[in-house]
Image 1 (tube, rainbow, N blue to C red):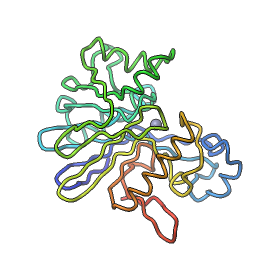
Image 2 (image 1 turned 135 degrees about the horizontal axis):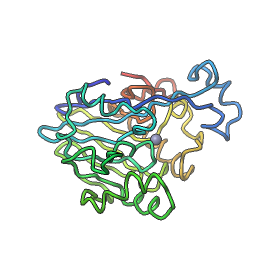
Image 3 (image 1 turned 90 degrees about the horizontal axis):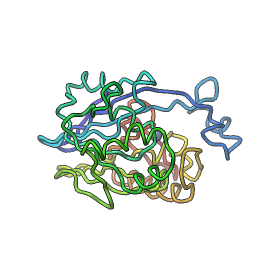
Image 4 (image 1 turned 180 degrees about the vertical axis):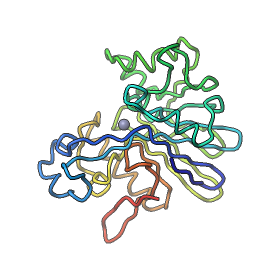
Length: 262
Ligand SMILES: [Zn+2]
């Protein structure tokens, strides 16, 4: 867990869990990735991926961005929230950057089927609702589809003002409806990125395709555009899978961009 501020907005990074994946599996089109980026890998050539979620507090409004892998992976989101002093009841909205199962795991209580955030609307990008709802996706059925019958579902399309300082912005490519959250407060900027960038390797080489992207071409365009924007405007960045706890800045020097943790 780590907390900081963007203007008057509290930004809290929560770590559900961390898992390591072989670099050759994450970047299958780049056979030499493990040797070129060994400095970003563990001793066994694996990329350590954080599974992070973020709380944004704007005055009386509390937003949770993504809900992690969930209890089956020994996820710590609920404990992290408690440690941060954020009660589940205080969450007004849960917004999803996208509907991959590592972002929806704590939506519902497994035993009761009730929402883990009892007073929250669940804001779901419509592009992903349509995409994953049209597949026979067991995790969509477990975590997302029930929100409709529970009366908690709120579909997002295009930009959406969430609070005075937070706006949901479509950033497609990783999935069709992938969405980020832009923060602007008191002249400061922040950006909860989702999976537009998943590791410091993507930052160094944004054209590198990874095995999780729905559309590598669109994902690469979005990645390059946002790396330009966010390294240029000094935004605080929160990335779901960037090294735990996932807060930092994109920094450009000598024509190269890199990830600088907070
Ligand atoms: Zn993810």
